[in-house]
Length: 314
Length: 281
Image (cartoon, rainbow over all chains, first blue to last red):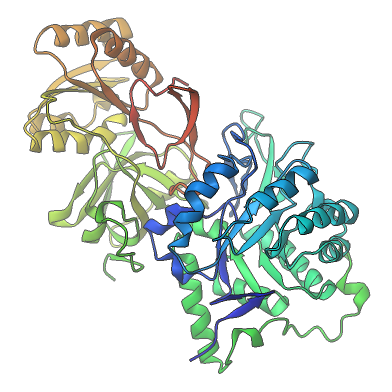
């Protein structure tokens, strides 16, 4: 019997597979038993009501997709009233993703959502779809440190900081999040992208630009997860383009303690359940007693730190 | 291989709300006319507990030059639990349906469903009017079958560009429906003519409910007639989708509500909506 459990700060997960925010909701409970998952990560909510972006909100690009959903949110009140009780029926820990337009508004929501039934808060300091041309807290170390300190002061719950690939300062942002009080890093989010219909010459998303997700994002997110795992002492949760068991293994070997599966669930709603079974089978077959033995087992002995933290291709 | 559901479904979910990811086998995939093809699948019994108006989310194959990534939502043309059969009527409109058209008998196809909220037929509705154009009739075919099963009187107004593109006429006729065809070529499909036909039905045998799908023009006409004569109705709507399950919020449309305009997900709150709530596009 192999051990699939992993530790994310004070939180013990029964296995390292969980959904990525925005690609999961209570609706998936109509397909399989959610207790099979390592954690339940909800779609980002904001304090107030948000309608989201104009349609089309999604388009596909050669084996991946772009989205500009725009964080439609019913607000914090209805979430606490309806969603938190719904997830209390499950024993997998509930991780609530939140976002805000300013650091103070963000911190206020962080305080309000710190209620019984919530096991951890994922702070989406990276969403490229909010106002101000997609600028996000996690693009720079200083704004990351500032918002994380305010969020840390607002709650005693574990804080998972979700980073963005839309930065040239990955390692510095990761260290700033750790210094600001993050208990774990989620690495990372969608990458700002665009697609144009050549026949109509119109952008294929109603919001003109959106976030790339799916298999083509994976090498970028994997590189970032590797860099972040080298840069900080807190756990890293890999996220980006994971659709097969080999993708899961790759992130774990790179240094991630757990992974989030997103767009792949749109293609195969039961993919996370299949990955958990495949991970167990892999460990059994290779006589590896614990999934924790895989974490950070990448054979990179030859690489110097200057290479590890590079922000441009050689 | 045989058709099969790929996972264990949760007991806690009522049977009619369960969603399945399944492998089906292609029985046949043939053209029915110049524009449309009929796909018949051998499907596991569990997934055929459907309601008329529901849809499946189909993983079109990566084939030749076609590389569809996301699933494609497709309304159910027919579901027959007694023979384990699921049918879709489709037109090649893009990469996904072009790839689908290349599937041959014996190949497998991954489908997720049944999904969404279907049509309602109130017990006291006796005279039902179906109005649709082109492939829109495909969406209404399971409703016609259900109406026949319930012993309702059915009138179907079928609209198309030309007479040879009128589809499913025999299917509806076999179900005992009264068929009225209108076409652009014959000059009978314009709104004024349609309005006259429908007003005639209302004045004659009477109509208890309207059902339609897909067309902005037909929606507006039925909304006006429904408001004027106090006749309820439902419309099946389409929208581009990603997950099909309600998670991603991609497929929202605007609807009239008591407190203003609201967004609803076509995949989850729909695809069938109240006729008067729906907004033109």
